[in-house]
Image 1: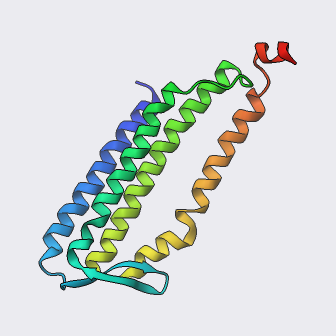
Image 2: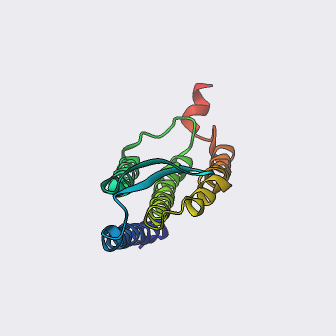
Length: 166
């Protein structure tokens, strides 16, 4: 079994455990929550309050985003390769898409679990610090940029058929 397949299986298992554990946690805390709770926040604290049933939002949005990312991962096999890249470069792009889909799946699961924690405890600062300190913004950009540059510079224009056309 390849490393990407193992990473994918671990990703799926951890994501399911995060969502399931978070949902069980929310359901056990549900009766103890006030009727109106903070459900959305910015770095200053809660900015949207609603009935506690809206606390289920992360359990709808998170799995939907997860399914979209896993659909992208599945469809990556159907991608037509670039004529500018050789076969190795095209295969690396497909693998990269799979790795990114799984990585972002985990990040989204952690994000929504963190959001759920903030809603259950009515403490927006933990989640806001997680989100706004860059984990969800700067780290993925850095992780994405390096392998893409590597693939482009090592494999671009190495396709013999592309060279013949030039």
